[in-house]
Length: 271
Image (cartoon, rainbow, N blue to C red; front, side, top):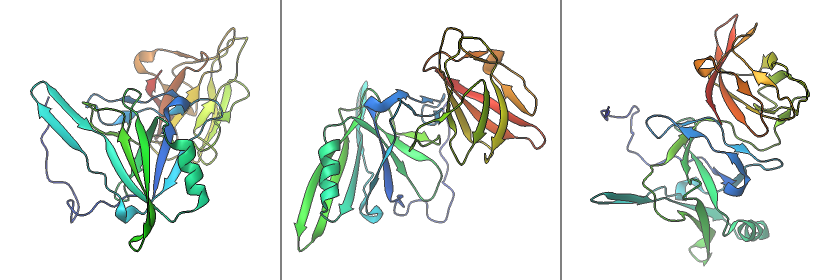
């Protein structure tokens, strides 16, 4: 079903973009599992789950100088657009050159935040990743790097919208089938390898907000742990009631629902 498009909320929805000052970069070679998109193909469900010892990185830019414009072409049966984001990094410090040395030519996904709303606009996919192209200005106009993040080709897909977890540290490591989640420590949990099957249970959910996501990464083993519907204190609700098996590098993302006396973890997606 095709939707309507109404006037956006706010006093000046057509005013200048109000970008956050840090862009988040994810090297595609570091991604273990990508989030899916929902039925409308924009909102992303699940988390970017990274490989062992990998993390997301940040890039500081002068927000007022950023340009998130992109163009599309609409030839019959051949719609496509060119993903692009242009940012400006002030100064000419050695650390900036070292950053560009390590990141130039690296396929990546970029997350672009806006101060007017939660979540991040996403550019870059596994099929059409982004790459950064730096240039430098050092004259009376100023001292800064201009960085163009551009797609490695054209795409028929619009930017995504991501509200999942950000990974700047290793996942929390569970030592058994009983899992404690502390939102201030981490909401992505690595399960251990198991030789004797057991059902995963949640002993505590601390410092989580309504609608937060919790992702489990399977640890495998000869007889992996399983996650099933039900539980006490924290009730797990799985799609179609189908249990999840903690196979090595399998993932499941659950959305936290605070119902007062009872907390729910409701399956969002599994990979």
